[in-house]
Image (cartoon, rainbow, N blue to C red; front, side, top):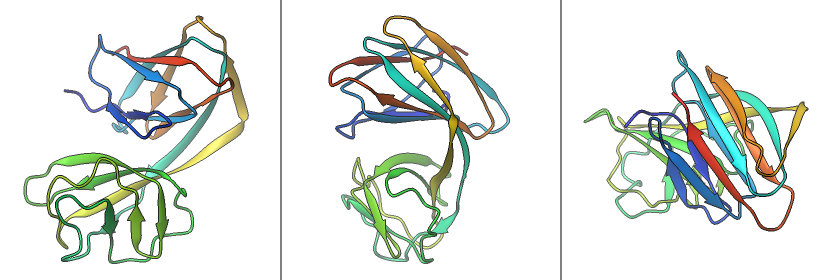
Length: 183
């Protein structure tokens, strides 16, 4: 599976996009970040929505924190770091956890943070983490002047190069969004 990005719906279910052809269906979306996790590659994404929605283009990067030595265990829905979490960190968003032992990366959602703790981790932790492991929340800046209207049933294509992302916001109560990695 190729690392591309992460999209999630309003219920917090996370979806890892794979290499093309792969079409992801997201129902009842409200705010969906779609992030290019490969900074040296350009990725093309096709979006198709059943209802009109707004798209904002943005950019950002991953900020590194070190895992707490003992407080991040299998099944936890919080993740504690050694450093104070920076004020620039999004109030809710995506966090990438890196395991020093096997080099694996796992993406999770978090619903809030306070001090040194990310809360509402979804899905819950699937392993124990110690002080050699790292946490990388995605810190992004949305370019408010770049709002685009995605019309219902009219596909749009976007190129995400580097640490670029799209944020898709639903403008109606119901709708389905299809996201496809075209590479």
